[in-house]
Amino acid sequence: MTAGASPGDVRHEFDVAAAAVQAALDAGARYADARLMHRRSESMAARNGVVEALSQIESTGLGIRALVGSSWGFAAVPDPTDATARGIGAQATAIAAASAQVPGPKVRLLGAPAVTDSWSSTCEKDPFAVPLAAKAELLSGVTQTMREHGADLAEASYDLWFTDKWFVSSEGHRIHQRIIESGAGMNATSIGENESQRRSYPSVRGQFGTAGWELIERQDLPGNAARIAEESRALLTAPRCPAGETTLILGSEQMALQIHESVGHAVELDRILGWEAAFAGTSWLDLSQLGSLKFGSDLMTITADATLPGALGSFGYDDEGSPATPVDIVRNGVWTGVLAGRDSAAVAGLDYAGAVRADGYARLPMVRMTNVGLLPGESSLDDMIAATDDGIFMDTNRSWSIDDRPLNFQFGCEIGYEIKNGKRGRMLRNPTYTGISPRFWGSMDMTGDRDHWVFWGTPNCGKGQPGQIGHTGHPSVPARFAGVRVGVTG
Image (cartoon, rainbow, N blue to C red; front, side, top):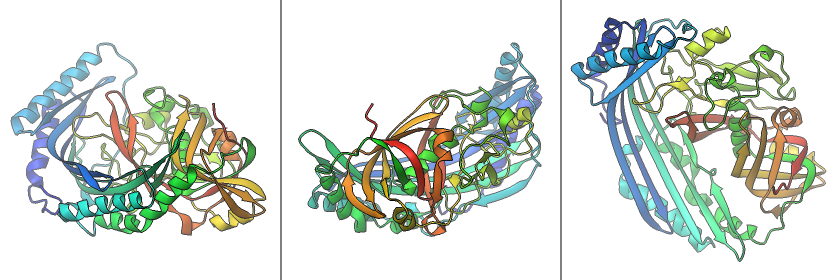
């Protein structure tokens, strides 16, 4: 089924998923759910004026999980038929039953009212219908422009995803969702005698969302190619970021990663409960402090909201059939919420879930970030600079390091600017900063207004073993922080 196709065969897809669920129940599962997924992806990359890579992948498969006592079982099959669906339904139950021979606490699930529904993301311009020649011309053109303006290495790429999925549960869910995701980005690298400098646009990864080719057109890669190439060249001779404590202003792109690493991963409930430790570790947060812990300053209000139109972490229902619902994560500086699934929510005594997704049909769903973002304040970026006597502005991530709680962090950015007497001054190279999450967020004293609010998309969040790649969103604004250590080199 292509991106513009009519979902005329949805009844058959539901029937195949339902066959797997029924087979799991017949084999002894007390609960089962199945996801039949059809996914199409396309990516292209260009370097120095030449298209070097094109990938087009299409797959269809069915994954089912079954619950027996204290344990989940999971099985999957590509290109499913009624017969193979029934086979993996029984197989998932057998796996769960084998695991339950070493019992733990019986798994309970937060209630999720059974619904029959469909949901689609908004797409103005089908990205798969745009001619490959036009896409190649865009990427090769901007890389050539970057080369002409001083870049030694110029790269650009786009990624597209089309996903149809049908969800069926033993509780009566029948949900069809159609999601189109698009994004693109570019970077220019200039090489000096002892180091190289890179500038990226719109961010280090590009910009992504649940939208069509119109999202890529709005980024105006051609209109920014010369600028970032010239900045990468200028960084080679810019003075180094000084070391010490100062007022720090972060642009919204760097703020998106700051939120992702120091808030998003920390509030995943499976990490808090100790169920998950891969990649970002567990969490420094303690459930007994939910609703009372001071996470940051009064200006800090962060939500997890999968209902935001066009954001990369948006959907109608998660992969457990829970509807997308906004959740307060931090409200006026106080930790108020988490990212949860139906089983972890039941353990924690919560009345919401809705944050469980899987990377394709062959992966077990797990807690993932939705759109975890900072709500806007009342200041413009110009206001923040004007109110700063001595400080540094940094933006566009270059490197990150965070411990396995995640509590302590150190970030490097692509570019910095000195701020003196309320004015932006000279460019700084290799800017870095470090902090401890609650202390850092507690020092936030100005936040950007709604005009600066950007729904940044992160298409490469890793989690789990076997590893899964999640698509997450991070609405963010520029923000100012007092007394931050900068210029850290070790």
